[in-house]
Length: 84
Image 1 (cartoon, rainbow, N blue to C red):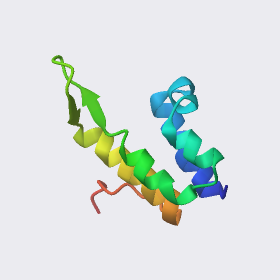
Image 2 (spheres, rainbow, N blue to C red):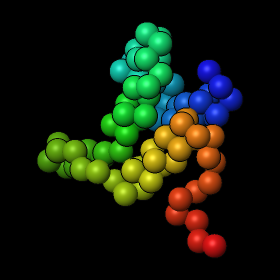
Image 3 (cartoon, helix red, strand yellow):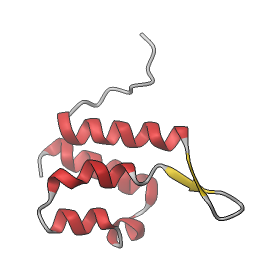
Image 4 (cartoon, rainbow, N blue to C red):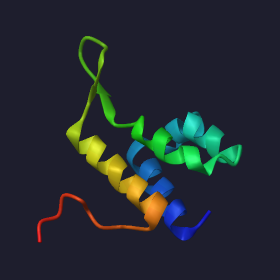
């Protein structure tokens, strides 16, 4: 892994926990060497469970995952929500 790929995964693990990462399809793809699948797998983790059990996209989680993908793909650590 490059440093920025490692950093993106570190951010993901910090947010969701090592246990969830260890049992994720994301880790299976990494271990299989399918690095191109990582952005898609990261984006799957942008939903929260509702009281009725359904999943709904969270704007906050979606923003975090987009940032993780930017770090993974380009080494871009900027916050897309930042105002100049």
